[in-house]
Image 1: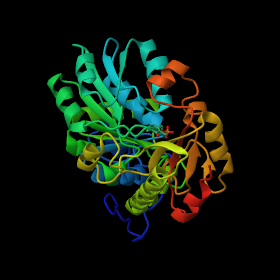
Image 2 (image 1 turned 135 degrees about the vertical axis):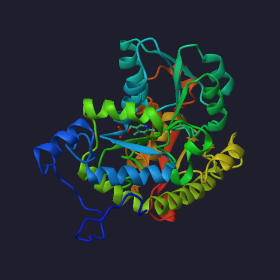
Image 3 (image 1 turned 30 degrees about the vertical axis):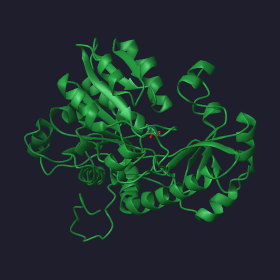
Length: 375
Ligand SMILES: *Cc1c(COP(=O)(O)O)cnc(C)c1O
């Protein structure tokens, strides 16, 4: 929680916020040395900023990574990984159960620049192995997936990636380093949307990439030259978020577990998707690679879309929005929002039933939240 703090001579308790676009030099010679890179130091906030650096050092420490670079959003973090590490003719294998905008970034933009893309079912490690090609450079996934909370063994995929000299990147937005540390399990890169649990209070957009070596230098070079870096003000907000991250996500996970257990006993509910339940197909793997089960859960109500919409419209506390990770609980109907663009066949293939409802559980009283779910 204190990693990365460098107090100024004022001795401030809270981290200083450096709202400045550029930095000055003591002399022309110092300016020349900074620009030439022979002397370390700030030049311009698109390159480095002390508040942003504090955030980067703190998140790198939490993820157990050598270096972190902060970005203007989670999508900018994913873009920076692709632009920094892929070139025309390279092949990317992605889990098919990823954030919708990430799918669009891959198919509508990366493909345009000659990157080949394959999508595979997240939990099927044999499918990942079978999709490997000589030009495969990057493997990309989220575990658990959203909204169905499927899980894959990060260690198993890291082994496949290593054998084929490919890079394994894990979007760790749903669990955060408090509940899962992909680098410890063999992943090469961790990606975050800081907009979700790291802020946790719905205020700002941001993202980050954590990893080591030359890869990070290439990702940083893209950001420095292309511009989607994090603002100092947002970094300061996320620093405050990181101070309470552990408390929040542990409590939110406990509440999600209680709601999942309660839902299992409701006659109107056909199925509950939550890795903390013994009925979850990968419950054992979740116990092994995660330090908790997370704040997200999904369930299928009897009666399809109509029943799901009725349940959603009956709530008074849950916010009807697709956002997640907030201290305010949210409720979503994936089939008509986040996954609304899929064809009926695609929905069926990816398990997005018409009666599926997704919750991101916040910090309100769990009794009030349960009372708010009326079928
Ligand atoms: C929200 C989200 C993103 C994108 O992050 P933004 O900050 O909205 O750009 C990426 N991955 C996952 C898993 C997300 O939930």
